[in-house]
Image (tube, rainbow, N blue to C red; front, top):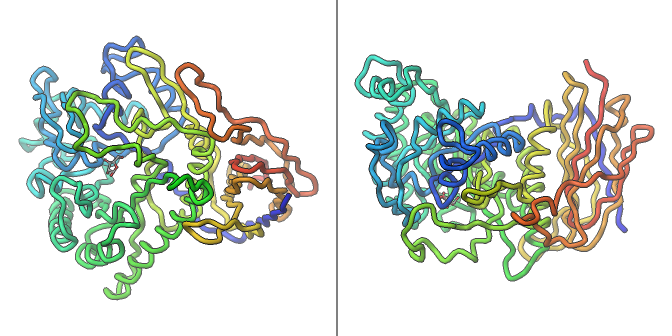
Length: 502
Ligand code: AHR
């Protein structure tokens, strides 16, 4: 047994917890929309055709923001096909996922769902097959007051009031050769700059996200961000980052350290953005929109060209394990600890497609293992993120070298008098004896300790056994300001306590 100690001091602050970190992603892909969040024939469907059982689970999951409509899908999407009377909407072939798109869900339907669910939408414009003109029209359709033809069209479609979407992505993964309309950094930078300028003419207050790299293994990583930001620096607020993690060659220990990879990714993007700021003699700070992240067993996916053309195919419906949930929990810890430079983060995706929520058509909806760390973090992390002093054993990984075995994120909310410790033991075999010194926070009482771990780290939830993996009550105790517990190998913890409120 090894020991880890954590010291918390309220004076050491990373920043206010940015709640947009708890974002999710709905793409027109596979069964995320159709038979995922939307299924008019389902017994629980509301008057708009959206599933009530899924809506209940989404509320429990607690995302604050949702990115839409893609993803790769957006790069060949005609938004006009998805508005107006449903009977008149065309059925088309989506080239991103070789799927039949019926357009029964589109911009208005989705944004109205977001409003009902009280989740902030984040939209993307198509800079693949389309570009400036379609982006300008879409932004006006979504955000402009009536009085112009395009905004009046929205009103005629039943939405008199603008949807007022503040956050927009300038395309998606334009660095990726798989993207419809893939571009070089120079080509994209120019298009993004002009699109951003035009979008700001419509609404100077829009927050814009330039495409960064699709992952940090891309050959253009780093250079892409520099070229794009040199051109777009004054016109955008955020640069995107995407990362999906899976074990390679059965190397679970490196996989468990995925949070370290994400940290290095964020640090590199921030350094590049700040380098461009220095070159431009600017005090402006570009932040990261980590608008796609998750565990995804990409090795099981045979590529877009292998997809048999159909409507709502069963694509990348990964079934997650306890170990995957610990990785997801650790990735959330990384995102929270970067609250000062990560402005947005979206777990990809929300339903069925590499998702926390699974559904069967005309059947049940249930929580995957990865649902739990997200829901716990989104519900309980609040207030201010503190920078803990951590003394932990390390663990050797083939992919990332020596990394900390324990990671933690700590928040305190003086308004509510609540504090939360999120903690992962990334070690594949060794448990950790953990002591968290909370004494500098004042009088403390333990509220709850729950954790994810299992004798079988490969256990998962299924339609037949949807509650196989749920958070377990833990045995943490607090005495004299010291919180103590044992963190089993491959475990993720959420510990809540009271502090004196101000
Ligand atoms: O989330 C699935 C896909 O992964 C998205 O469409 C794309 O942006 C990324 O490559």
